[in-house]
Length: 106
Image 1 (cartoon, rainbow, N blue to C red):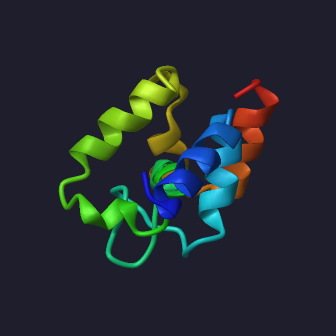
Image 2 (image 1 turned 135 degrees about the vertical axis):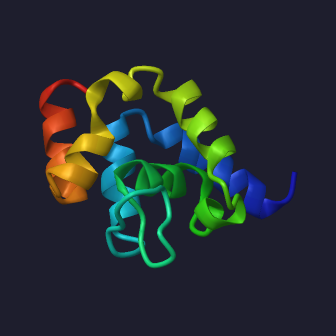
């Protein structure tokens, strides 16, 4: 394992809540809508993915399928929290979404 892989592993171990991952990832790029990475920014789950697996990891997988699967493995409850609804339909900021998740213990 090279140094960059060690740093990514350490970062992953420090993120224990989905709200925390969204907050960290939201600092990396603007908010996007409709998909994990819209060519300009990331949705709330896309922000979480970049926080955990590193900046740029979101667009290294064009269809996003592996990323969705991986985020569901780490946070299996994510589907039932309607994060896509909050991000894409209600247009809450990723920080507002993180606030709601944190209030629920996530």
